[in-house]
Amino acid sequence: MPRELTWVLQDEIPRRTASYVDADGRLDLDKLLAAFQEFFRENSEHWIKRAQYTEAGPQLVLQAFLHRIVNAAGRIEREYALGSRRVDLLVVWPRETGRADRFAVECKLLRGGRERTIERGLEQTAAYMDISDTDAGHLVIFDMRETRSWDERIFREPRTAPDGKRITVWGM
Image 1 (cartoon, rainbow, N blue to C red):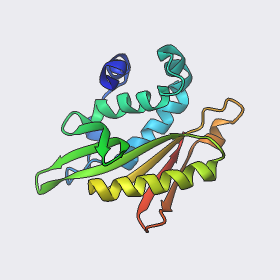
Image 2: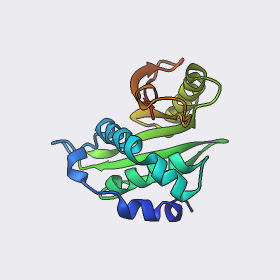
Image 3: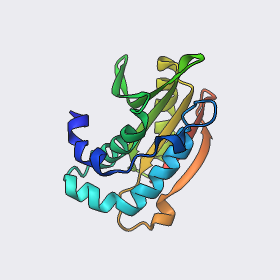
Image 4: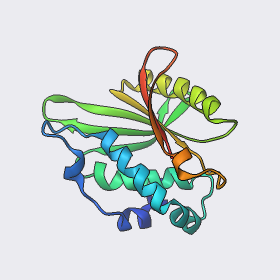
């Protein structure tokens, strides 16, 4: 269902896979998410209103953006079942050297304040990372309040979850 909902977006977003793969064949998800921040800043209003998915819209746009790059060699598992809870996206990038790189990407709409949203998201993302044995965790916070400037919404912060896992928090 998410793939069908994002098909039009996937088809219209430019694809440059090589830009996000390093010399060792690793997917540079940090670089990819930074590019998404720029894309989202410039295009989110158009895409979200067009898709008419106010609540799920930001996540659908992110999925479409990632899909265009990741599915060239890897895959994205959406709402990957992890016990009784679910991670929004599990990005799997194969490596010639053996085990695939795995990245947990949790998406949250900002509610109840930035720090509160981040704290809850860090705990949730860290739990997903443990269960799914991921190499890195990313928490994407969508601030859809029109009263906030883009300079206030866009940020990137390395954080540490209560269990010590390193997670990159991305503001959009």
